[in-house]
Image (cartoon, rainbow, N blue to C red):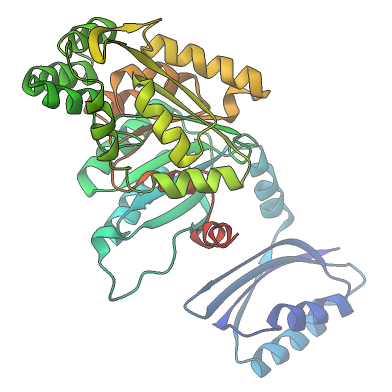
Amino acid sequence: MNEILLINVSGVDKPGLTSSITHIMAEYGLVILDIGQAVIHDHLTWGILVQIPASQESAPVLKDLLFRMHELNLQVQFTPVTDEEYMEWVSGKGKDRYIVTLLSREITAEQIATVSGITAASGLNIDNITRLSSRLSLYEDRSQAQACVEFSVRGNPSDLNELKKEFLQVANELAVDIAFQKDDIFRRNRRLVVFDMDSTLIEAEVIDELAKEAGVGDQVSEITESAMRGELDFSQSFKKRVGLLKGLPESVLENVCQRLVLTEGAEKLISTLRKLGYKTAILSGGFTYFAKYLQNKLGIDYIYANELDIKDGAVTGEVTGRVVDGARKAELLHEIAEREGVQLQQVIAVGDGANDLPMLSVAGLGVAFRAKPLVKESARHSISTLGLDSILYLLGFRDSDTALLEEL
């Protein structure tokens, strides 16, 4: 009868360990059923599940492996596995797989303990834990650092909505963002990313900046905040705010444009996406003038925003054409995806306001970025602790991957 054996190895890592150990296994015709390895701070943890053919005795195999481990100064443990235990493990492949991503300026033991406790209570088993961010320096300013750990989990949680609510509560309490995604083919094959502009790609609400120049800053800011919280209908509030800009000189637009500040990580994110062949779009309830500026600066493929009506060198207080509100953003997302031959599951949408919720809900990956509480609670994913480039972590990219792209 075939024997199944779990072999766990640990010790200081060095080149050639895997080759040396598996060479012995090859001499006895062992079959590899599973294998995994992790190295943390030059310390190796290595596991391999093998099947010893019925034609072989296990004793000679174990003797030769023990001798080689001793030569390599490695610790080893052998654990017999019954046929029933193995088949129970095999049956686990029918369970759903998910990715839990933790993002913060630094990852703490409390965050890991809390999140892993929630996953366990939900019937999810952790198969693998991977650090996607670079190694943290002891001397760098942690306030600008990025830390990300990814859990690969398996199971069939009874209530996904309740699980996500727990993650959101913990995220708010422990200053960490927690993304929970189905681990499927679409996660690794996104192709289109659409962005809101104001307070997403740039650290300002342009209409508020224009209002300051027009001397109606407080009035417009109050309406803007209320609209972003979802307390006012966007189209009505938008027309009211634009009306307050009547008479503003056209020359002011360029002045405002030059002082716009890109959001942390925006330039890196879009540069990386372009190199990877993604298409990008701005779907904004703001103004085309500023969207065009960002398009030229960042290399955005599509822009859709509102066209300020200007006559005799001054803003008339109106916009031309259909207002780009929440419903229109969702429609545009559909249109661009169809034009590019991309399925909705391959689309990422990023925004911060209530008017972004329609497009966040139809995209395969909708991310509420530094969003208002209502938007964070309604969106499937949210990022508040890091910059826009942390979205790359949700796609499974490591810092080492993006560093390589930056050299190209």
